[in-house]
Amino acid sequence: MVYVASTTAPVNIATLKYWGKRDKDLNLPTNSSISVTLAQEDLRTLTSAATDEGFTQDKLWLNGKEESLDSARTQQCLADLRGLRQQVEAQDPQAPKMSQWKLHIVSENNFPTAAGLASSAAGFAALVVAIAKLYQLPQDYSEISKIARKGSGSACRSLFGGYVAWEMGENLDGSDSKAVEVAPLNHWPNMKAAILVVSDMKKDTPSTSGMQLTVKTSDLFQERIKNVVPQRFEEMKQAIRNKDFPTFADLTMKDSNSFHATCLDSYPPIFYMNDTSRKIIRLVHSINAFYNETIVAYTYDAGPNAVLYYLEENESKLFAFIYKLFDKVSGWETKYTEAELNDFLKEFDQSVSPKLDFELDDEIYRGVSRVILTRAGPGPQDTTECLIDENTGLPK
Ligand SMILES: Nc1ncnc2c1ncn2[C@@H]1O[C@H](COP(=O)(O)OP(=O)(O)OP(=O)(O)O)[C@@H](O)[C@H]1O
Ligand SMILES: C[C@@](O)(CCOP(=O)(O)OP(=O)(O)O)CC(=O)O
Image 1 (cartoon, protein in one colour):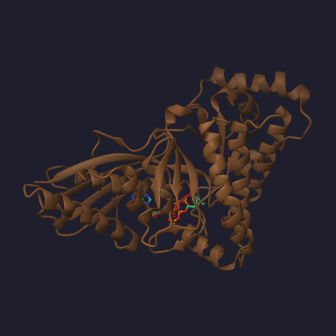
Image 2: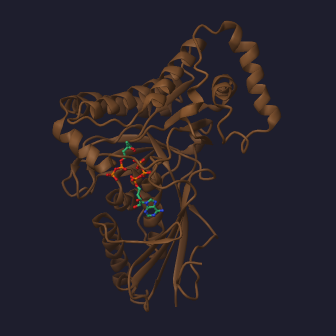
Image 3: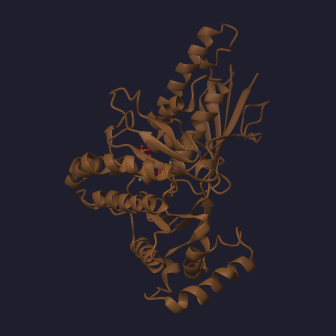
């Protein structure tokens, strides 16, 4: 009999960045980090996991293609999950001996893989949660997040919705390096995100090797992990608890800049942002200066895409600028009617244009391929969708 379980898992985008490992094999970080989990209508992984006594090999199909499961990281995740399943079997002799059987895993991302859109985070979170469900593990999600962490560090934060911290921990075996909820989605539900996709191309320097180089060569990095991030970690959690957007946003922007500064300070230097990324940074500062209030924050991961965080109530103020500048780029029409989009232009003409005290770069849209308009969202979700045929145990 083929046993099957499925889940979806979200992407998360850090507002306090994880950059640097103190243990590469266990993905133990040199600093704690914080992220916002994003809604799954726009960005999510759907994963089904199956097991059966008759399966002969562990197998993975990702976006319709069979992929290797051989990476040490994936093997770690599978071994840990099987270890926990063994405990279930030891306590309940009736429980099927799934820990001894092979697994079939089928997964689909509804967005480009490895484009700096945190596919590995959603991917490993979904993989681990699907198998934990299949195995009926009793552990809570903080415990399960330690297994996702071994797949990809940032994946541990995708086990929760809303506002999430990854506590770096101290133990050498990683037993206290786990994700915890800072605040649930409904605490501050009006957080939105506009992602300006600057490039869909696969990135040059993978996060793992980039981090290794920074840890080894950057002096600035030592200052960051010792004196900058620990304090920011506490301040950002407090800003989230207080729903204090200006503080949250200022910390987010400063931390993105600090992380990219350590990349530039690596030797040889690593460049994740490009000219368009930098123009967007300037634009965001100009918009905040124009309103004399911090209404929007940028943050960049290991790639040139900009993620802009803002509150729903400030959307028309922000979109007066960004729809005006990026209206030629796709992604708006799925979220707004033509009348709503016209209102953003009207807002620009009536409220912004007469007072505009800086020059807008009409060509900036050329560096952006699309916008993804999304918002803060919940953690992994149960689903009735299943990617595996329950009779054959193969992808549908
Ligand atoms: N649904 C999935 N299931 C299992 N593994 C996945 C899944 N999606 C992505 N991955 C793994 O993650 C890898 C991509 O990770 P990578 O870190 O290069 O890109 P990214 O996550 O988009 O970028 P970043 O984490 O820096 O934002 C893929 O090559 C694959 O091995
Ligand atoms: C810049 C980041 O997005 C780096 C994410 O790195 P990964 O989690 O992809 O790295 P590995 O642990 O090596 O898989 C910052 C962040 O998400 O906190």
